[in-house]
Image 1 (cartoon, rainbow, N blue to C red):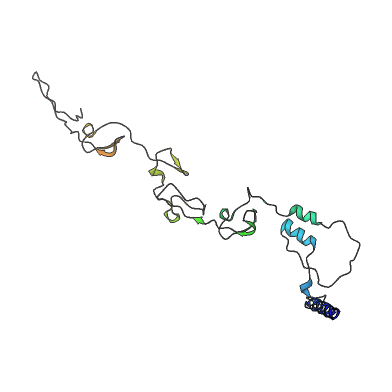
Image 2 (image 1 turned 180 degrees about the horizontal axis):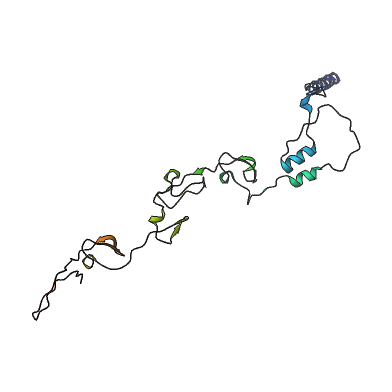
Length: 224
């Protein structure tokens, strides 16, 4: 009785093994050797893609007999690896360093390897402050408000000889220390203390007849 039980268990185990082996699909994915889905690129196609971006051409799916003996011009796997991108976690660009929307192949293995898309936004200048946000700026005219510039950035607003962003100043800087009562009334002048000041010195021109009697000459401007 014990021998029969052991025999039946062995048969059951064997049959289970046969059932599991028959569970897979034995048919090939594409039985037709000329199916285009079976076409492959060559190693040379891959080499040229890495070297210069050439698209390459899928070879025909069907087997083609070689037309001659193997040549020595083909590239090896080592050749492919010699021109393949290598990691650069020092100088390799980050997405934040590439213009927004522009694609590139990242060389960093710390999170930016492979095909990447830049995220660096284009900034607009702010003429209300000298401190500008770091980033990419499109070409602009610092003196054109339409570009975010300042229309006050013109030559007549800059001191003569002063160059700011290529704008050479022409304005004369007032110097001197005269005050209003030292300049003829109605005349305008500028000094280091102010500009467009108006003199207040009176025009005291008068005819004087010389005599032996002392005469008072009024203070002010005399034309001689």
